[in-house]
Image (cartoon, rainbow over all chains, first blue to last red):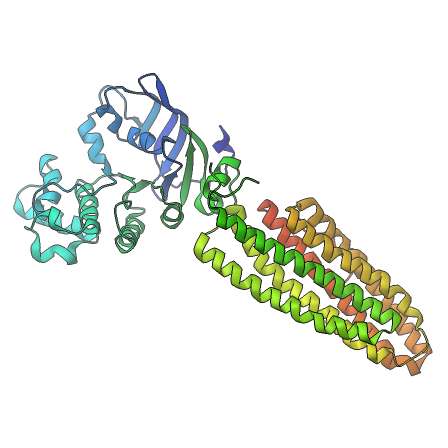
Length: 263
Length: 232
């Protein structure tokens, strides 16, 4: 594969690995043999034109594609060396360890408090109200939302602004103590200020969680990530240090895409 | 290279390249005319070189403005980014090259008072020619994104340095033998130094072009001799 030529600074702690991953939707092959390592200490951005497979690939990392009946995944994906597609893998538990934030903020139609408390409660992470209170505050603080909502924790989560809702969703993901957070275009429905807050949040969360973000906004990839992977037509064309990808990409296809020459 | 999806971006890049090509052409002409004026002791040609330098300065300002606009509005990436940053740096260097040519032209009336042709002057036109060609090639390399041509320019700098050492020695020798010519010879030393600096600047431009074209810094060049002339 081309991307293996790219020099990466050694990851301090590899969290997830994918080896020759192929995804099929029925007859159609959406991912054509992708191998990549995601590490703990760097934010990884997936970029590429619509339909390139970046979101599909992201979804293989916590088996979200299982919910698509026609989807079939080949290859190996591991979390801490453990095969996440192994038959004994508890998918619910996996998705708690590998959390996800979506394009459109999707808080539960419940209170702010309940949005955060729901996950820890069903995963048995809290014993009693006092425990939950601590988790809710800690999660909202990490999500950078606490100061804005601490006086109205029992208001509906859907009453928040779009940016606040998205931070609530990040807080909800954090509440179950994940190891990896996958973000699928988390800012595409947000204004620039709310986007900047999410980006700052990603920066703060870096190192505590392995973070993978899919984004259409190349400037965003440049701003928030330390590693960038460029996908095209289901292939991983190039994976490297973000500053290298944006100043001196090795592959012609990467260059054409990031310089705005993509047909 | 493929066009940008946004056509206006290509137009701005083309405009930038056009301005730099014009600037390079003017700097090259300034060097050649300054040397010609010196050779022929042509004060009006020298005055023209001085006057024309204003246009070089104006282009520098225009390019700076355009580069800032392109960065702000187009957020150039990868080779585009390297190109516009190179453009910004190149114009400030070419502006200096223009200043050196102007400085040579300004010395023409000061050496033209002497009707005798100074012997060391014979080397200067060839030296000037090499420097002007380096400027020409460095900017052609930018226009064509030609890393090999840029490397060739970088290698040629030693030719100018060697010329400078020869001119320096012969001028010093000449001054020792003809103390009455010291004033003129001192000016000619500055002329030689100016050309030597032009060679260095053309080399810098070539290094920027190499980086813009390849994303790699130019390989370290071999420094044959010292840039400073040896005491003779």
